[in-house]
Length: 253
Image (cartoon, rainbow, N blue to C red; front, top):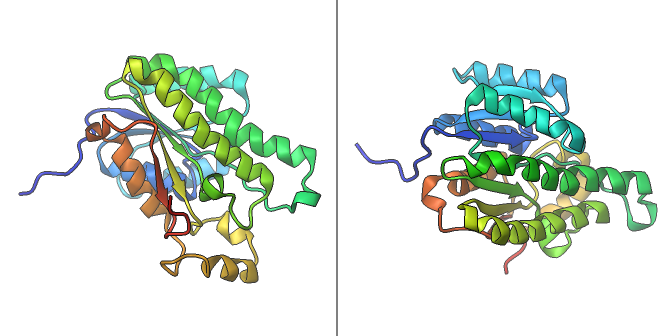
C-alpha cells in the first residue's frame, strides 16, 4: 500500500463560490481528501444543487447562503460555520463574477459589482476569517485569481482584469502580514476553464481564445482543484506568496 503524497488532517475548509464550476470541484476534491467543507454561495438554488450532487456521492458538506460583498453579514456566516464544524483552517476565495464588456462600454455599475465581489469580498472575508485561522491547524488562505490578472487577458473586461490583478497583489501583501501567525497565503491563477463563465463567450470568441493556448485546449475545473489541493495540504507549509498558473501555457513567466 502506498502512502498518500499529501495529508490534510481533521480540518475545515470554507470555499466561497463553492456551489458551481471551479468552486464545486474544489469542494469535491477536499471532501475526497477527508476535509470538512463549508460551501458559501449567494445563490440558494446553486447551493441546493451542489448539496444534492455531493450527497449523492456520500459526502456531507455544509452549505451557507452568503454574499461576500455584504461585509456586514460575513461575521455571522463565519461564526455559524465555526460553531457547526469546530474550526476554520482553510479559506478558499473562489467567489467571482465575470464581465466581458468592451472598454468603451463598461458601466460604473458593472465595474463596482465586479470589484465588490472579486476583490473587496476576497479581502473582507479574509479579514473576518483571520481570528479563526490563527487558532486553526496548518492555516491556509488560497485565492483563485485568473490568467487575466497575470497578463491582462484577451477577452475580459477591465473590471475583471483589475479585480484579478488585485487578488494577486493581495496575495503577496497578506502573505507577508500573516506569515508571523503561521498562516500561508497563496494563489492559483487559471486560464480559460470549461465553466459557465467560459460559455458566456460566443463560439467565435471561444475559438479565438483556444488558438492562444500552446496545449491546444482549455482546462477543466478539476485541474484547478488539484492545484488548490497542494496549497491546502499540510506539506505546503513553506509555500506562501506564490502564484501557481494553471493556464495551458498561455502565460509563462
